[in-house]
Length: 322
Image (cartoon, rainbow, N blue to C red):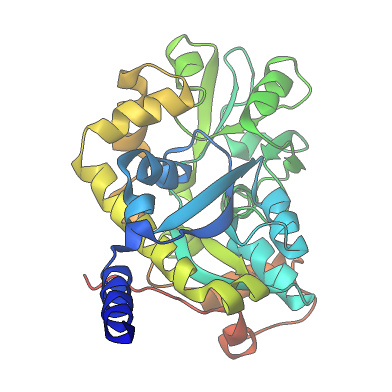
């Protein structure tokens, strides 16, 4: 009798230990993502649609914000585990003030996708003739903040940087004259551009000093990293896999057009013209010394810092082998 019971228990144990990971309870993560509808904010949604998250035994709940500043607040409070696409300037500023955060990957290296525009009948032709005019960016510490400041310095312009939040509100403010110069990320505002309602007066890629500088990063709450490190590592692996898939599979453009609510041809134009694949490497935060100089110059930190001073901020959990 006991022998049969032991054999049955052993057989049950063998079945349980050989069960696939998908049969186990998935690890739950709460993830905040800046600005839904951008190409580079869509990769985890692509991963969800293609089943990559499920394959990695992850159950991810998404929260969307209007920019890195809002995303930083959420991650600092511990309301989410991971925050995607945060301006590195703001991240360093928050860390210097004791924020419980860690950088787990690069997100965008170089300045490529943003542009600044005016109404088609505006007398402003470039940032050089925009002295004392208001120029929009999303939120303090965001990559749009850094890029705008860099462009203004490069142009010798005395335009007034003004935080305007998300893209729809910025477009409304620009078209109604509340803001002189709006900001956008394709595919947003490409239709208005095609209809000659707006004109581009500056592009992020013109900011030459940012060419090899990591400007956005993915971050986590310290407690989440301590308690969920394995799950966060798998999330970054899925994120990288989704990026590779997105540049190889035309279906990604279909998803992107759906998320951004634009025609497919505009979605494809946005990716082809504004989002080079190499900018989305996640394994290395580059030109950190330059970022720290910018952080001091633009008053995100109060005293000069070196890479050694902020080494505790960085914990890159996954470096792709390529």
